[in-house]
Length: 301
Image (spheres, rainbow, N blue to C red):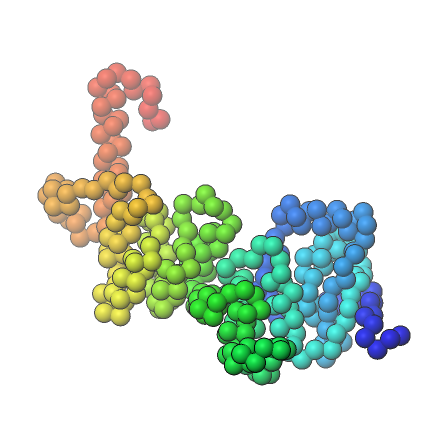
């Protein structure tokens, strides 16, 4: 066998483990179904890439979707290329192979870039180049060069790894569903990533409550308020209720006039309790008006 010839082996699927902290999701969508059918009809044309572990098992480097498809097709073995790789080499190859996919979520890029950056720093990875200018690039710039991203964008993506899952999901929705009304762009997400996890959760709750996400300017304001120890639930609701250019017109009320007609003991309650009280009052008012008109049969009593 030639020295550089790739050897493909059939490996027992039960001996293969997923890559540790694998940042890429395996979605069982239409393309995955088509992959299963293709494998069922034609066999696996593109072998997976594994590395041997010290305990005799194997770690998946590239091919998590193909492995799941083979499992669901009740296959017992899978064609694989087994490589000898250090931990850092394995991370770099895993990231490089998966970032070639057609659809990569912001969260996937975030953790993948972070893993690759740390691995490259560990081993002092070099980029083979004939251009002496490229040798002057720092590690982040080298990653950007490989994937067609600016160093600034690489840093922004990596910063997303500091977001709680609830907020990161809103960032992913910018790619998953163009018609999704609640999304957070990369720049505002970066600002929110500097908040404490407690305050990030407050933001996530406020988004859910107000059905509105912060703009870049609002995210900057939220970050400043935390630095000043002025960030709380009420302030967040006020910020997110502000009308933005891409949102529907907000209905506003005179707060004092409403408080003047509410029971005094009610004003001591949580504002969301007050809101529900007002909603219930409006529902009852609507029912009374229908009774006056004689169309009580429309009511779901």
